[in-house]
Amino acid sequence: MIELSATAVAEATGGTPSATVSPGTTVDTATTDSREVSAGTLFIAKPGEHADGHDFIAAARAAGATLVLAERETTDGQGRPDPAIIVDDVVLAMGRLAAYIVQRIREHSPTTVIGITGSAGKTTTKDLLAAILSTAGPTVAPQNSYNGEVGVPLTVFRAALDTRYLVIEMGADKIGNIEYLSSMVRPDIGVVLMVGSAHSGTFGGVENIARTKGELVEAVSPDGVAVLNRDDARVAAMAGRTRGSVAWFSVEEGTFPLVDAELAAGTASFSALADALTTDDGEHPEFDLRLGAGTGAEPHHVVSGLIGRHHASNIAAAAAAAAAAGLDAEAIARVLNGAGATSRRRMERTDRPDGVTVINDAYNANPESMRAALQTLAVMGRSTGRRTWAVLGEMLELGEDRIREHTAIGTAVVRLNIDQLLVVGGGARPLYTSAVNEGSWGDEVDFAEDLDAAAQTLARRLAPGDIVLFKSSNGARLGELGDRIACGPADVPTTGDRKEQSQ
Image 1 (tube, rainbow, N blue to C red):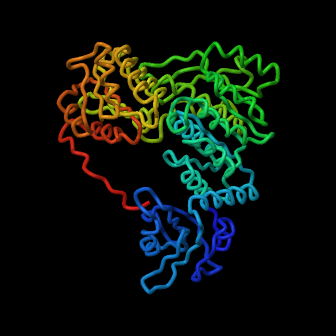
Image 2: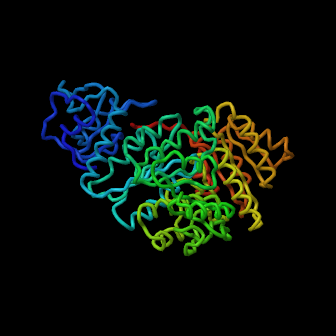
Image 3: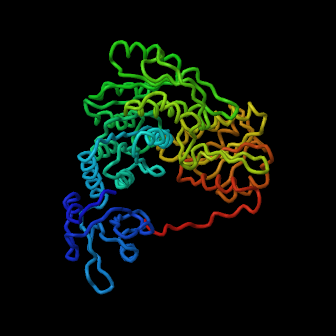
């Protein structure tokens, strides 16, 4: 983080310094986790659902926190006020501080801010884009999937004055979220990957999701670029919502003539096309990347390290965003060739010594990403002759569509000829029932009430050569089970209860 005085923090957040704050106090890091505190840290006492950061101020101060951002005054062991900036709402104050830092960085040096949103693929695209941009200058991107009103400021707080590229992942669960995040960082480039049914229950429908994702391209300035998925009709329609120029990315052959026509007409600035898309024996996407003037652009052959054909769209999006940021096609293709996942539980492959292959894709799930992962599993099974397992948990936040969407996935598993299905958790039971009704029964499909029961089933039944996919929303915790199974077949532990130490 750039070095800030206590006075600057107070002015940026609209807060009031406690009596013990010295005007000369400075901070150069910021965190909401007391375990990450060191000397010179601004400890952010964020109230949370399960823990209140104010309860960890003493621990943070003992670890060296110089200053606290809090909603109420606290005192040390001698009854003296802790040095703090007191605000009405810590989360909103984090946003104001992030906006101030972005402004300071822009004033100091040329900085390009890239925002990425979409119902699926944000983290993978962010990781790929950060890898490309880091070859051209100091680059800051989110850790894990920091993409909300807390995660975006935490990403900004990691930026220095010489940051050349600032990549921001933007998530949302209601209308206005992306608009708020965009106002914080003022993106020069806005990337929209897809509009799916993730969080449709909280949004009130897919059209509201499209409306919210489009808030990003509305925030792009006239000098900026909206990078849009030409293969998604709802995303393509966002071209009319931006003041900036439009860049397309596409993997569908039928859209290529459309993109070329738009380039010729001047309604698009450039494109990133994944041409002649196929997959190799490991189900890694392989294609010719044409970056520039449509299908007439020079091809650069790319074989990705990611698993699954569906990732070609994320790769093309990262390429288009990097081109919008000024990098040349050859440099972009060089980084993308062989690049794999860097964030956990995104089609993460582990080959056990006993011959079992574990694919852990259980960081998040919605109907679209669930189908894509299952299709990849099916192809891997057909191409190798190995037995396939789908271990599936609940897709959360689908609202009134929950039963229908889980039912559809159960049907899809059977029709894709996945050999074995293990459904975990009561929330996913419609998926199990659907598979049974579709004609899969006996040893082909099983149900486990919880992670421990599922672990015991897999310990008994997994055999050398099996490929097992774990997929669910993060809240269903199937990713933890995937990690355990990836460790090996023996002595599978129980989950137990986990408690967060602090915020």
